[in-house]
Image (cartoon, rainbow, N blue to C red; front, side, top):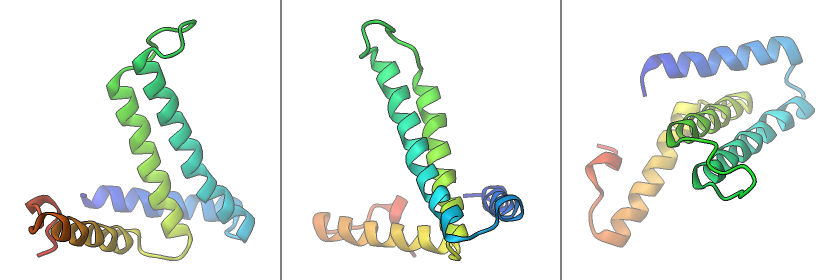
Length: 115
């Protein structure tokens, strides 16, 4: 990810801290924001499938991708709000996934290699 993403994550955390503080209730809201955004992504996917016969097809895959990006950013902001470096946490997570893939397939795909 490029530096502008990490700068935006930290700037959002700073704005939220300034406006709302960072007490446990506020941190709870930031974690719950991830679930809220995930619900919006799920709703958009239902709209892509046209699952609701009354509404029909209401969303595009591009809109779902945008909602998923909102989920990712909300998660990174929540991680930073908890006092962790989101880049390090994400890198550690990718390493664990790579290790599981290596164990299952015998090799880490280049996209998840932690060289």
